[in-house]
Image 1 (cartoon, one colour):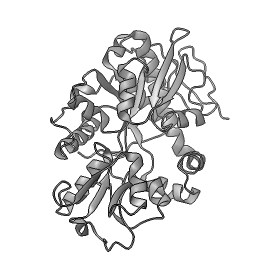
Image 2 (cartoon, helix red, strand yellow):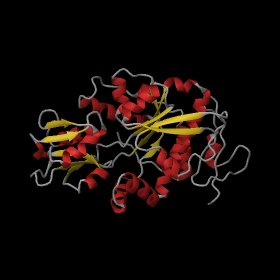
Image 3 (cartoon, one colour):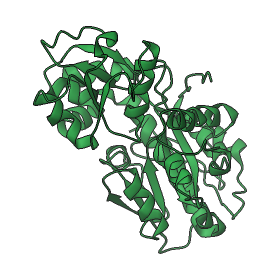
Image 4 (tube, helix red, strand yellow):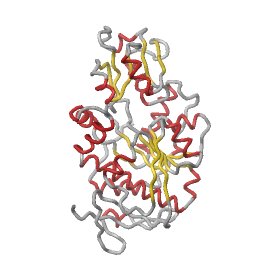
Length: 356
């Protein structure tokens, strides 16, 4: 392996770091340190015995972390815990069972709408301008060939999710209302595919791997122009009052960015491990999905990325998933932006422009 540089950061509760040094790949003792698999922008001084519990879904954090060896020489231990759904991740954080949570785009605004105000997003991935691997598909031989044909038909989707918003928006683009012009069939995410496969609905919104598992049914539309691709790292607000946890989480964010960026330099390995082994589709199918959407990169939390996140909250309100029009500005915290920017620069990753 080549000798890959990283900076050694000493963090306080206010995360006082020298980003100039890290961007240049210099360590505080003037020596380079080899990292076997990924470039790490930082290494944080954290007291011995510190542990972070990371609540995730479907190995979305742990799989790239382990494949990239992103935890090598981390000054704390990381324990990943898998949960079913964003609401369960949020509950794990609020109960103190986890320190860090990884969720999709919808759970934070939905939680805020229900009165949960003690969470904050500290890092954010997005993949705007792509389909996101969301496909609105029709039952084969149903006679449905375009979205307009869905008037009066049964359309399945998981409520309160990104797929819910994309379904509603696709229908709206073609003059249909999800609640009044079609027969909406609300199903848990895991129930959408078997219900569609059984022929019980005329159309459903499915993920890329599910599309192939279903035998490539006719596609009526996808998430292009609607999808945000947002995945967020969240913590309890009071966790950020603990200087040790602030330092450890900052280091974790840098390594999570590095692990994510690793995928784009190791595409074949990622396709084999994620799409083939985890999702159960062929290598060529996984490659097509990856090439269609590319990498969901980490962005600094600024006006542009917050505006994109706000579009999610707006969509949830428009679809009447939330009762209130949630303002997400109080629920984002950009204190780790320098870490995100430094790691992306170190990896040579440029995020797509966000147009909101």
